[in-house]
Length: 387
Image 1 (cartoon, rainbow, N blue to C red):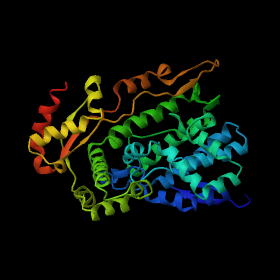
Image 2 (image 1 turned 60 degrees about the vertical axis):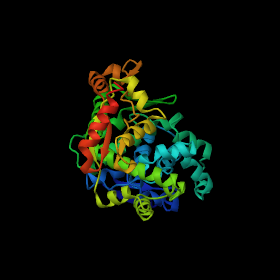
Image 3 (image 1 turned 180 degrees about the vertical axis):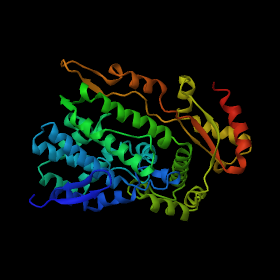
Image 4 (image 1 turned 30 degrees about the horizontal axis):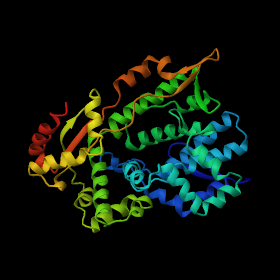
């Protein structure tokens, strides 16, 4: 590669591309990611959060190459890891994580597996294999096995890039990561990624940033409500055949919204006009494991819908955003100066404190603005029986 191609990036400045990487990026499959926003509906709260899975994938690839070379991996492995990072989000559908649960339910596959299926059925298979990377190796690395740990773990390059990028484009000032120091103090042993003891402060900075981004952005009530509006619009349109699963799996955010609107979705129209549902009632289940299991059970939505119908509400009057399934536990590992290993939460009181608090992800019942008081009263009557 005598004259590498350069892409100017808002986070990492110049990103170098090999001929193989450029061929992948120029494929229709990858170009679709230009139209899938990284933060789904967060732009309705943070107007500049318009960045996409496209540039995040480039950033993750860049950081993966930097870290792999600093760890001393051979160039063949660096090439494979960069391709794995570049393609790690190729399986996301429209609205990314918002549509993931629905696509997983319908296909039985996580987005990484769906992405590998797409690579296998497209011309990308030949491009990747011509670069000396088998689909078996690509799959292993994309799923975080072996050296793929440097991409997918708690302190991995995927997380470093999206936290830096999300903070930049939302303008959230609470997020500061010493990414360069972190990349310089990483170690890899037998399928595990470690931060060296001298890099613990940088690791803490990443986890503190993650904590604040969840509180300020990812779990922002309006972000969650608007995301649930998209999810409910998709579920309803799929159920009555107004859209096909591929409209979600291989669609883009705007195209899907306009398709839903054209099919008569009031929720999609509200999203396009930013006439959002408002929070009427919320329940924090962090200390109620039994009740939390109940609201996550298969029959919960039907039970709640029946209760609301008995109280005079139509299905399109309200929606329910369930608590996030993410856990607050950090699995990052530390390599001590004497060669022993430990976990970051054992080595850091700050991390233990963050785990103990955890970002709040309450159940939210939202509704049309004029119905808030009535929906709140009916919801309170229902949830008081679960506690």
